[in-house]
Length: 285
Image 1: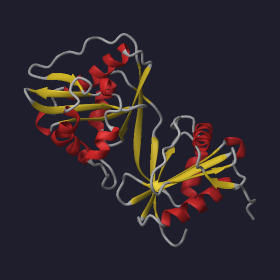
Image 2: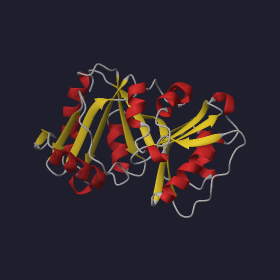
Image 3: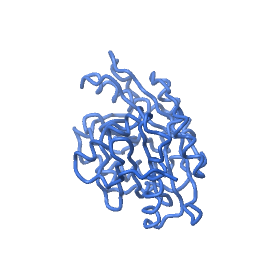
């Protein structure tokens, strides 16, 4: 019989800060920033030892479920009680699958997910780039690069020119929800570090910079293979050096070999993979 643990909803800013502390203690490579409040997102705390959330995933057919328990509090039933509460909420979101991202380096996390029927359906590749002296980006004839800070109106135009196709091209197990409104809210959180490539007046590439990581890097299909993706990321490295950044972090899907080659060419160091895991949301849970 499981011991009863005090599980409650995280409501205040202090609660969300505690969630972030527990998450990093349980999964040190995970996000350090608190989760955001969103409609239909359930965020739970189990004292100071565990936490979890369930919310609609950006994958159209999935509910994301994430559970974190501090290493010294594992095997006490905390994860199982969080799991039951989050799955109960997941049923209300009317999607057929559960989805979870698990650090491949944390065996207990992989075992927890596997024991509950999750199987690996993909991998996300994390890459870090230490920032030092960064040379001036090498120009490509006919291509001009400007920042979103310089030309804010180009952010919306970039969605229509390359962004929507760029998201559609990401090799994912199911369709991903991305809209113009989300693009405008999320993609260029740091306008000075987000860049657009222009050929004349035509947008042929884009590279976004979010608060904690690279955003999408995408190039028009007609212009791929010319080094524009590398050029855009080189501009981001030069911006990072000027802004005093010590490191940039990039995430790519395991099947996105072209962007992984760009990162390796620019000196990004590959980290252990994040496992993308999924299981049906069924009555057998």
